[in-house]
Image (cartoon, rainbow, N blue to C red; front, side):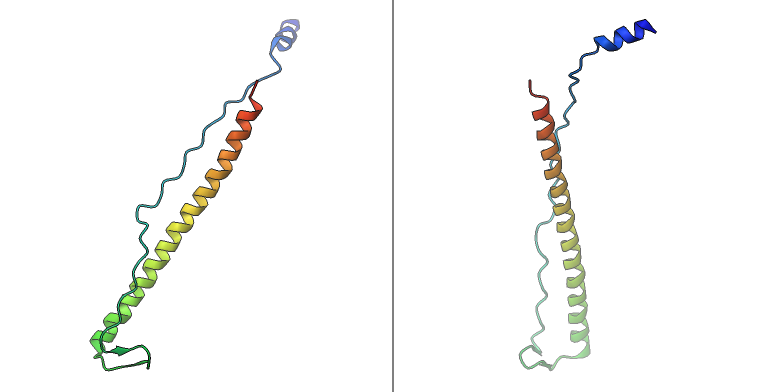
Length: 104
């Protein structure tokens, strides 16, 4: 028991922590915002009328629906990157504080 007590007394009181440097998040692979589909020539957006056949109108509606999904995916990808960047900023602060604490 005396040996353990002596060993404990010999352990230095200033124990240095190992500071882990944070890694920056990767940017999304595609930063291009989806482009809105063009209205068909037979659609009058000002008067909210059209002379289009059903096929053209259905294709345009499908294009708008795809555009909506693409925008939602784009927004989610950007939000994920923002979350990763905020986490990284917090980790940088923790790393800096750790380094400051370990200065001699």
